[in-house]
Each structure stands twice: as structure tokens, then as C-alpha cells.
Length: 246
Image (tube, rainbow, N blue to C red; front, side):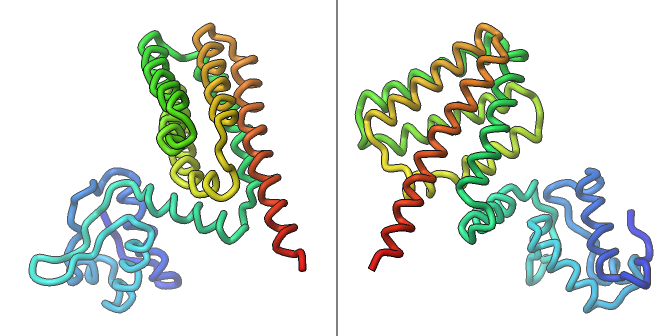
């Protein structure tokens, strides 16, 4: 599986080889990497270089280093948590602004709705309608249930991504929706009107997907994301102005 590391880039080559073995499926979640002594011989590198490479792989979320008797380096499942944390940090450090996030989501949600409308089965529609019924329940209970409503909202968007069958859409949706609630809390004060607006949008998007109207489903999804993005951007502006005022 492994070969001697290239001497002009030993550290990075060790990282690349182990990473590639995990991505290619030669190493599965739960598998133990060879012992340090074995890997040192396989890569023909020093123990210090090997340990540094393993620390990088651990930081990437690809392996877990267990200490003590019976310890070693264990391959982990896909590092979604680390990816989501990275997105969260980017947004919080404003390298990705709310405007950037809204613009990106508008395009993605539009494409997802269009693709889902072409691929949805009767079973998919039934699942969406069950989720919509739960969303109606929380809206009917009022603003105090907004967090539960947002959780269902996220599940509906994730279900739409799942219908596309495209892993990129599925991963991107999970990343975004795992991180976006904190921004709802900061920049989107929920009212009964906004809950109902959101629900109406979701119901209309699902109805258009059910009829297979890709163009209108995409347009409705884009408007939905744009409107709620504008709400948050406006609230962010108000806070900035207030903070700058003497």
C-alpha cells in the first residue's frame, strides 16, 4: 500500500499517501494503520517526520491517535464535523459574509429544487409531505417553537438534496444547515409572520417539485433563500450602525 517517501518532500508525501489510501477505500473506518516502526520502515523516514505527518492527518479528522497499550492510529469516518467547523470559523471571522452565504445558497438551492423536481419519486414526495406536516404543527404552536421549526426546515432542505442523488449537494447542505442556526439566532428574529412565510415557501416548493415543474421550483427556492438572506443582512447592517453610533 505504501512506498518510500520522496526525499525532497518526505513529510507531505507521507500525508498524501495515507490520505489517498483512506480516500480510495484501501483503508476503511476502524482500520488500524501499521505500527510506527512498520511505517517508519515502509516510508523510509524518521520517527519525528512520521509523527508530524500523523498529527496533520489527525487534525484533518482522517485518523484518531490512541495512546497507551494497544494504542495506535485508527482510521475515522468521513470528517464532516471538521469540515462544518471550518465553515463555521470562516463565517465567524467574516471571510465568508452573510451576503456571500446568501448568494451561494441561492444558487445551490435553486439547482437542488430543479433537479429534485426531475428525480423525485412518489416515496420522496410522501416523505416531504410528512415533514411539511410537522412544520405546520410547529408554526401553529407559535414563535416559541421556532427552533423546532428550523430543525424541520433543515431536514426538508436536506431531503431535497438527497432526492438529487448528488453527493456534492448532500454534503454542502449538511455543512450549511449545521452552521446556519447561530445566524438565525443573531440576525433573524422570528415572528409568526416569518414562520408562516417560510412554511408557505416550503409548501410551494414541494408542490412544484411534485408536479415536476423544474423552472418554477428553482425560481421559488431562489426567492425563498434571497428573502430570508436579505432579512439577515438588513439586521446585520442595523447592528453595525448601532455599534458605530456614539
